[in-house]
Length: 379
Image 1: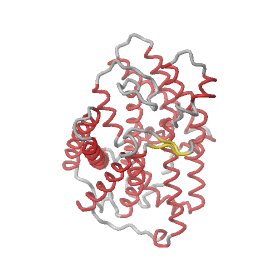
Image 2: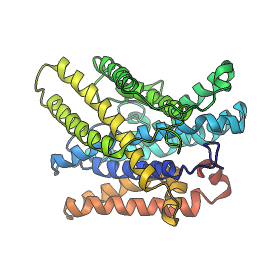
Image 3: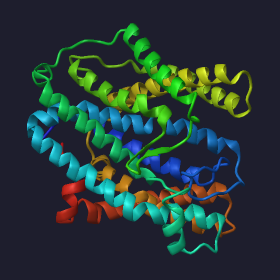
Image 4: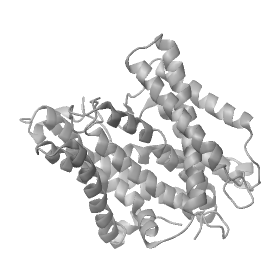
């Protein structure tokens, strides 16, 4: 069933979400060979140029916000279709259960790869007992499931508490430049204010439960409810607002250059820190907005269709996202022990990982009776 509530084709959203997952796989494959080691980076390899770091930075900005935006776009028709209690229980099952299993069972061995790449003699039992719950604690890619679950919970509460929200109707209204400016400004201010006390790329957990990059909390919330706002105003429908590709694609490219320049200025402390942090916040959010809208415009125009390949990618996107750390990072660790040049090794690791998780998802996670209820998307 189409979640849009009518017979319009929204295949482009499912295809875009699938490409966002592929982008995450590519990004994580590249990050294992990034020159900026961090706690969320699983294999450390320094023999690489800064071009990879730039590509990682560009992919990193839109991919998760696309997932949040698409989730927000379809949340209202879903809650109407299922009723509130069924909606919430379904989200707990499909997001909460995989989140808990992912954090408790699948994240520790993935995090161990970072520790063992630094200290090959460290036993896994000692790592799990003394290090994972301290300096190496993380949630791998599963953090986004916790964020989504919180967003869905907020919608459930809003639906229960607000009569006007329960009676929401779709109207067709195009965004004004004033709305766009206000949205980017609010996101930038939130990013900048938090950045004054927390480093831009820092990860923080709250009681071992929710784990986020604090500077991105305003955009996390903002893009989920931005998706709901877009649904309410009939965006991307035949009779609604359809972004112009010839406008948003150049804006995305220009803001990408501006954002990379700001990151470079921050890294090399080029100028007053306060000013550079402000420019970074603004350029991040300009690039985030323009890239999300530009990608929607591309997929709305060229990939609003079905095919065997795209249907399979869309169907398996969630499962592929869930599995890829368990395949990608061990391959990357093994690749470090070979003499293959990075220009061949990195693409090979990414492609093999994508194919393996695609096969596993298609054959098991979206087919096995118990697992398909968790990972098979509901259209």
